[in-house]
Image (cartoon, rainbow, N blue to C red; front, side, top):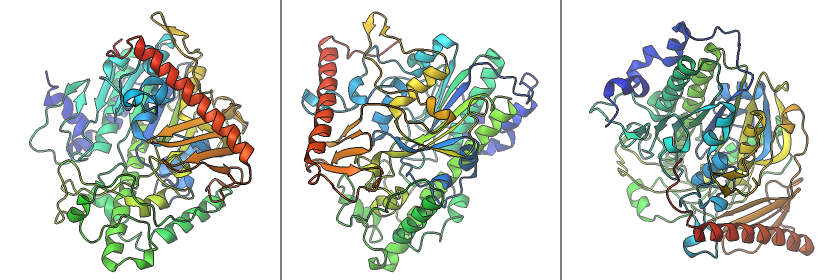
Length: 557
């Protein structure tokens, strides 16, 4: 049975903004006073953006207004070498299970039939964080994008708003509340997906306070912004309308300069690759999008006036989406503060991959007469401003060069992290988040699940870096997506795009991957290639075993 409209309106329609849940929290008598009498175990809030570039937020070099994330970073720490898997669904699998996605059937392996992955069903032992945190008394809630196999509630989340509609930010059509389809009214004026996602998270916070008192909670707040289509509120777009008319060349220099002032990075700015376009070719999209669209990061001054305006408008909408996401994050943090929970809440913010060079038209299509950024338009950022969003790194989402896999990681925990505004240089990966959360919850990863042995988690807890900038020791980090492959050992990285030979970089000097040292250090190349191959074979054997064992059935609790 579909959830009733009366239950949903408070969560999903902007014209109820006068009754925002933050305001309700302030008025409810059952809420703890703001003296932060919190449970001993911290609450955990994981905030994940979608297709956000490394430099898109202010505290990582951007010019977009993100005061709430900047304040969160000022109250905590920022990691400068944190990684994802280069794509949305593999990153979510790694974040929620603690395994590389290929270990849990969620991305392809080259020698298996059908790849042995690519969004297939996880093994029964590949539990998500709610099940792993439950022994410590955590209650878990999900708000936003899912993109993990199966329904949400069977994985241990107690409440869920699943934003399945990723083709139009202005309608809730196709979304699910607690795994049930939402009944959408004819008039959705005032609805915007980013706002609705936080409305739901705040409602989960309120109900948790009522039902479970001092028990800790895990909130997974997964935005679809700023993923295409570029849809934003008109008033947000207006703040950036003419900001990017100077182009992506100047914006990249501006952001790189700010990153140097912030002492985030010590690397040259990667050169643009004007011959490199989107990772997938949709030539029919250009007929729909018109002469303003281009699919290469050409020098800005070579573009026509029409192309410059079109591209600058797309970046303005992208910026508006990031701006609105930050405002909604601020609203959620205000709710935590009003509930007396902020001090003992571990809050993390990251992105699932780098900014996207994709250009396509899907879902309802694109009306060239509609206002850009409205629900009838369908625009993508493209490789020009995607290169700027990923400053100073090279390439984009789907590639495993630094531009595709580098993400901000902000960590704040006022009761548990005394550092304020500090940087952490140690390399980390989304596979490290499950070990980190288990560590702060006083738990160890289970060795088996319902009689099934679980492989050891490949990641490491980052908690040691919370207090000071220490190296988290590890043998290597590994990547494979769409034939793009990489491995990092210490400061050395071996990387290759699909079909290309290996490239070798010393990341201590060259995070921009501008000087290929493969010809100078052939033994280093062999060493790293052996490590990449070892892990690939290990993950392939695991996938073979679990496929033979019949573990590909539906993953239910």
